[in-house]
Figure (cartoon, rainbow, N blue to C red):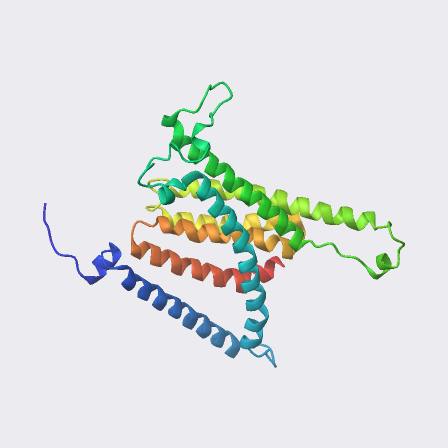
Length: 289
């Protein structure tokens, strides 16, 4: 066995430095990504066949997309945060409030005394951890389904026409209401199926050899996202409604790249993913539409 000191690049690959250094590296990587996108836009503009190419309205574009996105993020974050905090207080509140007197949580509120099965006379303290895991999982599933329901109502609002306003009180357009109900149900159904599919992908990323085959996994997921995107578009039939469903898949694709065996594989997988993103936006997307 031979021991030798690692150089600077090898220390970075092995995550041997502090968090601040990697935050700086990520900031530099993000800046380089923006520069590459700008260079690509300039090259595309200089080589376009259009006589009068449209100008880059960056500030106008940002003023349109940032306020609704920020407001929607806050409106979605607040109820989910409150519900998550309530679940934590019920299941793990002893780790904050009674850490010294009850460090294991066996006397916290009423949940430890509840039986796990109907045949149990009373709860077994040794099953406390298992029961907490199961109740936490059920709570997160419930929060997710409720969030899907209200998201579907937000994306498919109740629209009334001018003719409906002129109707006498008590009359309503049953056909429009049925269409809205069908769209919401279809969106929730597609979201649940997508969630189950993404859970399989997340479980796949915990495979011990996933980091070894990260390149093959990235290419496979990119091809798979195109196929799944076509299926989701055909199922939902509305680009506005299919966008959040496919956004969840893109988010999971970014998360599973964390399974890279070292920083260099993570960086290279990010570069490959960025290249696929440009390819999809500029060439594959227009062909699909």
